[in-house]
Image 1 (tube, rainbow, N blue to C red):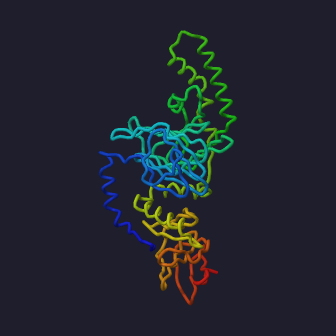
Image 2: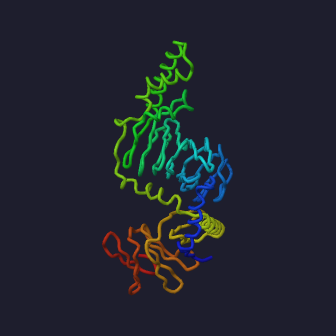
Image 3: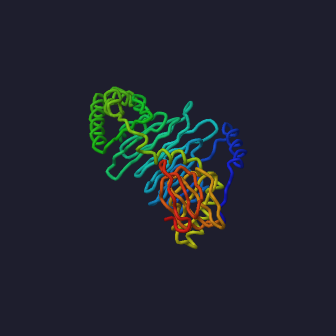
Length: 364
C-alpha cells in the first residue's frame, strides 16, 4: 500500500459531466463518505449505499457520515441519529424532511425552486432552509440549537397537533441569517404546545367551521408564540465555530473513489494495526487513520517533502512524518500554514508567524 496523490485535474471531466447532467438526472440519495462506526437500519453502512425514505442512520463516537440528497449534502456528526422521514427526488422536484432525534447535522442545502423544500425536524423544533449552510443540534435535554453560516433559515417550535402543517407556520417566521443562531428548549416546546392545545379546543368548541378554517384561526392566534421571531434570534461569532463551518465545506469534498480508497486503508489498519496509524493523501485531502477509523481529516495546504523513504507533511493542524507506503513514523500537533523545509536534520514549519524546528527522526 502506498500514499497516493490524485490530482484534482483528473476529477474535472467527472465534475463537468455531473454539472451538465444535473438538470436531466439529479444525483440519487446516497452515502458518499463514512468515518468510523456508522449504521443504516441497524446494519453496518458503507460508502455508496443508497438512501431511501424511512431509512435510519446512526453514527458512533468519533464517527461521521456524509450523505447526498439530490443536490443537497449533509454531514451527520458523531453520536447522532437521523431518520429520512420524507424524500422525493426526481427531475422536477427535491423535497426532503430529516428527523434529527439526537446529535448534530451540518447541512449544505441547494436553492429551493417551485415546490422544493428541505426541512429538519427535532423533538422540539422545525427548520426550513434553501440555498443555505447551517447546523442543527439536538441534545439529551431536548434543546435545539440552529446556527446559520450562509444564506437563511426559518424555524418554529414543533407543534404536535399540526405536525403536517408546519409549513403554514413557517410562512410567518423571521429569517435567521448568516452569523445568527436560535435556541429552542423543551420548556418552550411544552409551554407553546399547551397554548396551541387550549386555543384548538376553543376554536373546535365554537363549531360551524371546517377543519381547514379552524387550523387557520389557531395559526393566526398562536403564530407569535410558535414561530421564531426577531427577538429570539441571537448573533454568534462564526470564528468560534470554525470547525463546524470547515466541516460543512468538506461535506461534498469526498468523491466516491476517494471514499473507497479510504475504506480500504481503514480496513487494512483494522486488520494490521500500526503503532502510530497511517496516512492517505487523496484529492487534496489528508486522512489520518488509526484504530480502525479516521481520526482526523484536513486539506493539503502545501507540497510534502520527501527524504529517502519518508514523507514530511505540514497539514494545518499537524506535522506528519510517514513512510512512503503509509505508516506514520511520528506526528506533532502544531498549527502551521502548510509550508515545510528540511535543514540540518530539522523539519522547519511556520507556526503562527514563527518558525518551529522539529527533529526529523523523532518530531521533538
